[in-house]
Image (cartoon, rainbow, N blue to C red):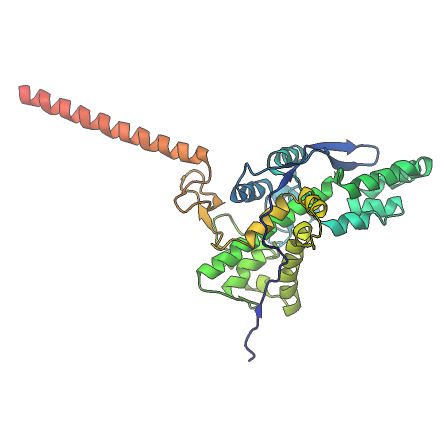
Amino acid sequence: MATPKPFHLTVSIRPKPILPALRNATFRIDKKIGYRYFEFDDEVIIQDTHSIPEIMEAVLNLITPTRALNVEEQKMLGVGENSTWLAVDDLEPNKAEEFLNTYGQIGLANYYRREKMTRLMSPSSFMTEAKISYKHLDTLKEEHKDNSALFYRRIDRIWQGKEIPFSWVEDDLRRLAKCIRMKLAIDKNRSEGYEEILITDSKQFRRIIHAWDRSGFAIPGGKDSGNYRPLDKSWSMSQRQKESILQDFVSAINNFLRPVSQAITTEAIEELAQKNSGIETAICYEVFSRLEPLLERICANPKCKKPYLIQRSTKTFCSDGCASYVRGLRHKAKNKKVSATRAGSKKKRKVGKK
């Protein structure tokens, strides 16, 4: 039997740190055509007020992984309780808007997608790229017929980065969350001695499959996807399918890094690249330029036990709230113990007096 060949990740980055750019983002809806988008201000702030691990954890908290269908969804789709179908929860626009205005812009780093938009010549192709329901196609066609300049002005605004479809932001956040989980899976494998990525049905590859949401079932929270195997057949994949998972991962990383992986010839071009880089660029740069591994830890709060990213080796809680909660429990337990000790001492003194 041939020895499995390791899969090597190839990522284009240059040795200059990059910080996420932040522009004020406002969520808008064009109800006539069902088009949801974010409008970005022209003013750009290069912000470093949040650490990259903090932003990464915020991404994972914002994006829920695929989950098993609930009873109502099973009935609606006509599938049984043992179905391997999974559900993806929609991103809430108000939470996404708050996230963008806190941590930085997203959706502008993928140059290819924005350039592709400029080649659109019809309302139907615009609806496909912006992921708008086709039930609004006739309305958009009428608008285009009556005022084509308005249609092309919108495309131009998207190309300039002043307007980004909500579906792009949602897709980028989902892919970014998967990239973070993939990095965690790779680092977990390395901590167990796997220095290379081998395309096999081993524990390390099961962990990678789950990180990229291609496992075929939802793994319960707190379970290690490298060890959890409810159905062996769920991991049965062709060599081509396995390679496509890693190629998709590398493609996503390189698309996000595009602003800082291009040849920078002038200060003006470098400034433009920085303005187009958001949290996706900063996170992907950090993921592939840091030397220490990025690992998960389970929150020490017994009421939480949520996985979180290690930002420092001494951190044991996922948030200040969890840390305060446990400190409060310890303080109450300590006071209770002291009170009990005092009560016992008083009782002994009374017995002595008799």
